[in-house]
Structures are given as C-alpha cells and as structure tokens.
Length: 384
Ligand SMILES: *Cc1c(COP(=O)(O)O)cnc(C)c1O
Image (cartoon, rainbow, N blue to C red; front, side):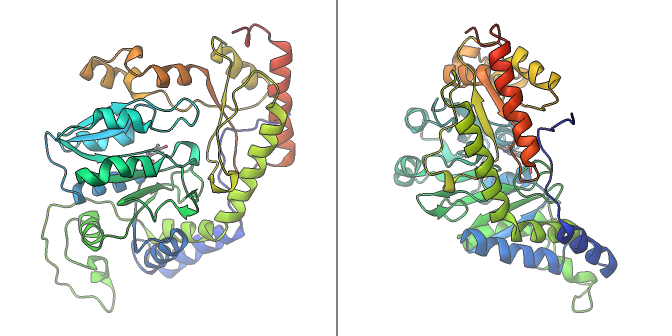
C-alpha cells in the first residue's frame, strides 16, 4: 500500500519543458512569460487587468493598498479562513472584523456581515471556501450602497463561477493563489484581477518597489537605465520561471478541474447515506473543488478519525482552524470559542480528504475504502 498524500501538484511534460525554456533563455525574472501569463489569465476569468505576483497574500495586501485602507478602518472577513486574509488588514493598522459563516456552505454569512458593518467599514473580503463561491449578490447589496469595496480571497477559487460568471470578473478586486497545494500552481505565486484601471496601475506600481512603469525592462535591449521611484513599494513581482509553470498549468486548468469534480462526485456517491454531512456545492460545474470538506457527526472524535485514515496510508487535513482559536487573534481580541459558534462547531468536525487531479483511480478507491472501513470499524469515532 502506498501513501496517498493530502495534496500533490499535477505536472505534465509541458510544465517541465516550459520551465526549461525559461532557464535556457537567460532571462529568469519578470519578463515576457509574466506578461503572457497575465494576459492569458485575464482572458480566462474575463477580467480587464491581471497582475502576476509572488503570492495571494501579496495580492490581498496590494488590493487593500489600492483601496487606500488606513489605520483605524475596518475590514470584514470570515472567522473561518487562513490567517493571510486577516494579517494583511493588520499591516495597515486597520482592524479585521471577524464574522461567522453559514454552516452549510462554510462561506461568510451575509446576515452576520450586515450586522458587523459600521461607518469605518472599508472592505469585505469573502473567501470562496474550497472553491464554492460565497453569496456575492447578498454581499454586494450590503456593500454597494455604502461605498464598501469587495475584495475576493479567491485562493481556492480558480476556476470557479458564480451564477455563470467567473470569480475574478465580479468583485472590485479578486486575489488568486498559485501556492504549491492550490488548484493550479507556480510553486509560490498569486494573481490580482480587477476591471478598475486605477487599482490595476497602483497594484502594478507597488508590486515592484514603486518604480514607474515597466521597470523590469531596464535590463533589456529595449529598456533604459533611467527609472523613477514614485512610492515606497514592495517586492511582490512574479518570476518568468513561475509564470512559465503557470501558463502550462493554465492550459490544463479546465481538465484538472473536471478531474477534481469527478473525484468529488465519487466521494459524494460513496459517502451518501452514512452519518456525514457532505459538502454543499450547488452546481458542481461552478465549483473549483480545491477542498472536499467532509463533516463528521457532531461529537465524533475527529482526531481519531484522521489518525485512523493515516494508519490506512491516507493523508487528510483540516480546513480551517478558525482565526479566533489561534493564540494571536484570541488574545488580541479576547475571543472565546463561542465568539463564532458556527465556525467553531464546523471546524471541530471537518476533515478535508485528498482531492487533486494527479490522483489515480487506485488512490481514489483507496481513500473511499479507508473512509468506509473507518466508519464500519470504529464506532467510537462516529459515536457522536
Ligand atoms: C492559501 C491561502 C491564502 C494564501 O495564499 P498564498 O499564495 O500562499 O499567499 C490566502 N487565503 C486562503 C483562504 C488560502 O487558503
């Protein structure tokens, strides 16, 4: 029996060839491949602008800079997310205002958002959990009349759609991740998408030291040695090595997504009728299926369940340990587990199963076999 890891990148000969070609070209950092990747990605999601960066966290940071977030402002985010969503708000001396989620979708609950809005609210950052789009219409109804920006944390959501439209073409700014475990990867990387010319120009400027436009060309034949620094920027640019990898992944993204949907449907069929709560998905074709969140019966011992899977050579994970349970956020804001009861309750029974396009049918059968065996064998696990 071989171990089925929780995540694994799906790399074909195309990715190897693309990276090799960049290495052979002698131009390794931001250049033509990045430019090409930005164009292809913008076209894929239907955005006017795409800015390639070295992470989704960088994209979120630049997005908040673009909307001119200031110290004392507030940004509403779900408690049930990765720390990146919140930490970028703290970079500005602003306050991440945590709100609870919808128990079925695991996405931010618009009713809780409406309650959390104040005169200081500058933005809402919904997270499309696992690749399932958050309720963007409800969020827009809250945000638009008050001039509040919506910045999507779409780290899980390429390619995802919401009522037929791609995530990346809907909100004011959308931030994608190409981290090693995400739906397409460049090792580390991210993309910021927007239709707003001013935001796009500001993000591009700030992504490379605040140097006036096309600074990366200064070492090329067509470039000039002269440049001007017009703001204290950051160092968030993507390399051509990463972009070449991203371009090859982008060409395969739909096929990879289709395979993940197939895996999700196999899981759903196999686990239906047991005591689990299966992931909510609406139209399965709109879902990026980055995470398959299985939820155990309330009171079940999730630790025992994950250990039992591991003993059967299956790597599972948990998404997310909500922010209010981490020492930093707990102590800084005085949170208790009851501060966000839905997030706490869903976290305690969530298990993320392996779901990636490099998974073979044998891997898939192994996961289904192991989960089924654990359910049958370990009544103490599911005694809840
Ligand atoms: C992975 C992730 C991020 C961060 O992405 P990076 O590209 O690693 O910066 C942000 N938000 C969520 C919800 C994530 O899962």
